[in-house]
Length: 134
Image (cartoon, rainbow, N blue to C red):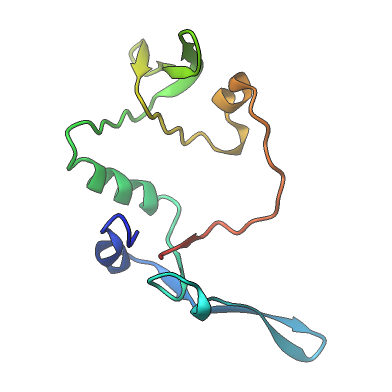
């Protein structure tokens, strides 16, 4: 967020800052992670409600003329032309539409149809749903 020059606005939104994580082992409390030493602008992690973060990005993305958002569009197939995908075909409430782009970001979660159709493998690692604000 800092490098995108969005940090100040990001931190104005409802979020929770975490500087360290601790766990209890028996009667002992043990620091598991200390984020105050991160080589970033912020020395913490920021947790924001999952539904607020995409809205934040869309709000700021609209400042750029090449930025477009299509809501209620379910990607069904990749558009491929002599190499890597160049977009997706999407089902909207009104019709099927092609969506071509240099970068297409899908928010269809861990059971992504597009990821499956692209033949991409899911990396099964444990992770927290957080983001560093640095």
